[in-house]
Length: 165
Ligand SMILES: CC(C)(COP(=O)(O)OP(=O)(O)OC[C@H]1O[C@@H](n2cnc3c(N)ncnc32)[C@H](O)[C@@H]1OP(=O)(O)O)[C@@H](O)C(=O)NCCC(=O)NCCS
Image (cartoon, rainbow, N blue to C red; front, top):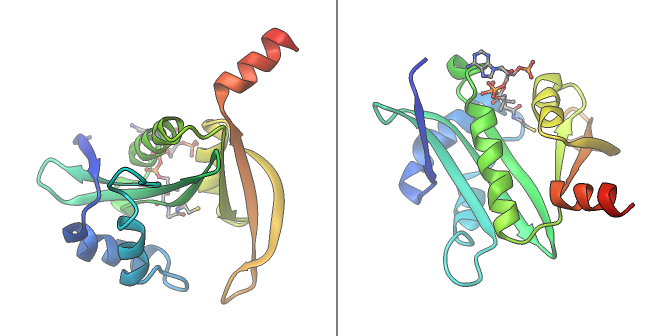
């Protein structure tokens, strides 16, 4: 397996990011404007987003992911790996880094939505301690597919509960 490097997503990464986004989410891909608006919140003293790309040694995009933070809650906004890299740890690397960003933003919990039929992604999330907490009916359009909402409490909080509970 060739190694990948994670770094902050910048606007000049958007062409390959959008190409991968459109190939992985053909029905409900984010627009370029949506990515621009997320990246606008990634810098500065009031930043509330962390967006990452994973890159091969030759600079090819291997994956990307993003987190939004606010009010002590983090939200995994998007996470994706290039299909020829699936199963090689790119998704795990991105998720680990986004969770560490959530801690940096002071988040006490992290939430996400995932299609009920996306078992591969759900396995990844469960491995990182996310647990199902509910459904959003018809969240994904078109197709009217439900979203499973998953939550990961800050592990430090969980530990505190065990010790003091
Ligand atoms: C979901 C997704 C991001 C996972 O990315 P990934 O890079 O395949 O994830 P990982 O490789 O870290 O983990 C996947 C599996 O590979 C295994 N794996 C990890 N590193 C590995 C390695 N070096 N060699 C072999 N297998 C490995 C993991 O154990 C894991 O197994 P599991 O599914 O049984 O838990 C990817 O499948 C994807 O982009 N899907 C399409 C977009 C999508 O659905 N995004 C989520 C929207 S909510």
